[in-house]
Length: 272
Ligand code: NAD
Image 1 (cartoon, rainbow, N blue to C red):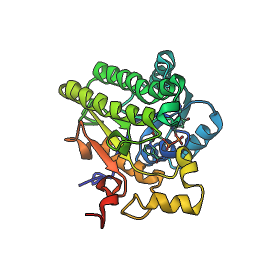
Image 2 (cartoon, rainbow, N blue to C red):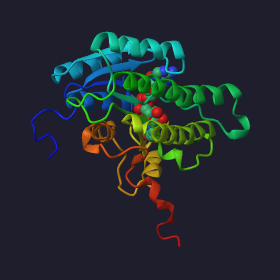
Image 3 (spheres, protein in one colour):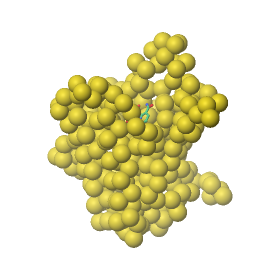
Image 4 (tube, helix red, strand yellow):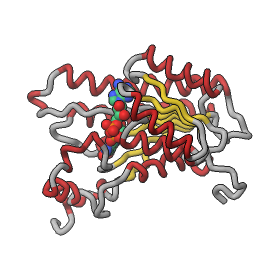
């Protein structure tokens, strides 16, 4: 039974959440903290919002620190993991969540906008996933903590599957994340490392503020969501806790979509 031994699901586990100071990352960091994990809240530029997430986690009874790092830079990622290990001793859970959009019509997209999105959304995943996996292999399984040596959750998107005109860089990065995740899963399962992705649909966060700015835009967005509501960061936090816990011990190499049915082709309703 989940939690029947009365210990929180992620008791004694150390988690890093990249981009943990806003949106989905903040929701995930709070949820992991509430489930008993000690959380490293990575942020890119502003310490203030990261410190607020840290304070919330502490208020809920766990421990947390904020660490600045740009996930697209190898030296920063090394520093993020070194700071985590220095403070908490090791890391058991990585939620590789940082991501950006730089949207443009394909014919107008600059190489710079292509490259930055790939650097953060795909190379950032490579660097963080590799750093986590190296630490998991070095430490090995601690049976009193978890059945796996470590758990990795990549924040992908429904756009690892759904093509997205005007967002070619973003969709290509998320398609890349899918096969990065699956290939790493195949390679590292024998070392007791589980890696999965979460594929959110439309979640109300700063990244998509413009797409739901007016009631008309929000109505258009809702046409894509059979379940009839835009998601909250907390919806994704709950999925992350499950994927990070031994409750999902037999799950690796898959994307769990949390999208209110966006992937069900709602445009076909009444059209065929
Ligand atoms: P957000 O803008 O609030 O979060 C993105 C986070 O990434 C921010 O905290 C930002 O500071 C951080 N970040 C950006 N560049 C970084 C860098 N170089 N190094 C470290 N951190 C960096 O938006 P969000 O919606 O919470 O996005 C989080 C993740 O969820 C992204 O990977 C995004 O692609 C994915 N996602 C979001 C939605 C949605 O509807 N909101 C849907 C599908 C997928």
